Image (cartoon, rainbow, N blue to C red; front, side, top):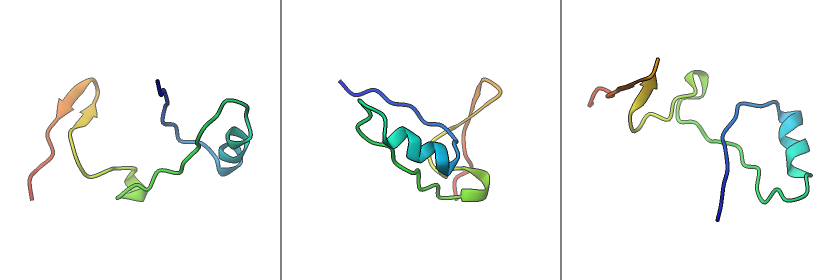
Length: 56
């Protein structure tokens, strides 16, 4: 079974996690819209509500 999480962390902490026992992978997340940290797909979850993205 795999478990994991996503988090916005510093590059220094990123490298510290990579050295911990039992950590299989620590991967950077290639955002499609880096300044807004937005993946550009799927639904948004804002203030506890699912918000549909506009279709282009």
